Amino acid sequence: MAAGAGRATGLEAVQPALPAFFQQVFACSPEVAAVIARRAADRSYAAGTPILHQGDETGETFLLVLGRAHALIYGRDGQMALLREFAPGDIFGAVAETGPGLEEADIVAVEAARAAAFLAFDFVALLEVHSCLGLAVSRMLLKQLRAATGRFMERATLSAQGRVYAELLRLARLGDGRRLRPAPVLAALAVRVQTTRETASRAVGVLERRGVLRREGDAWVIVAPHRLEEMVV
Image 1 (tube, rainbow, N blue to C red):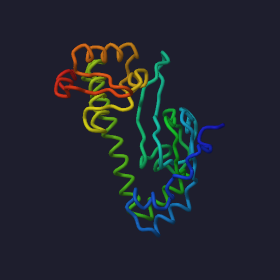
Image 2: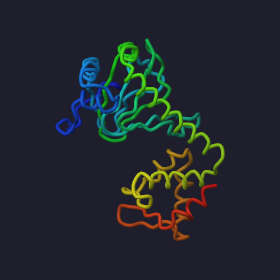
Image 3: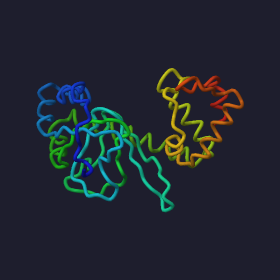
Image 4: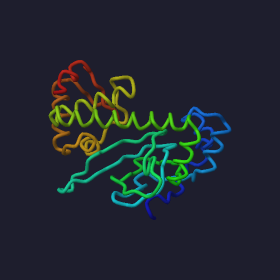
């Protein structure tokens, strides 16, 4: 199946209506949300399905509605690196462009996902007419820029081991600050911080030996967050 085409995932019954989602994400009126929905194509993707391929010419703007997606790039040595992460409410593809552009990364659904797809020139037209949409998209892009800047700074200033520890703290703070459930897959953790699986495994092993982290069933528990913070160097 071609990237971007989408397919059934079995989640349709629990998915929100697009107008209600647009109203929430763009902070717009029900009437404006209905106008936006009429320009959108509703697409679903199974976990692991490519949404866009690096180097492909795309003339569509995507807004993630459910699930998560990753923007992945590959070095000359074939090593994969995580460029960006997308959650519900994030946009990607041809954003604010009036015609097709080349996609800079592979965009892959990392779990069952749903996206609203717009023709790029349709999305630009909506931005020009509806100020609420323009303001919301500006905030989305600023959020992505800050996240990308933070990752760039970590890669420039931290060791590979330090990046692993910073990522564990970041993942823990998505919950209660201590517990990571499900426990990260080491290969995926390595991709997130642009290092090797072996390096990530050694870094986690150091934490276990020092009593900073322990495994509990399908979870990792950060026993001493302050000690882990001190190891982010």
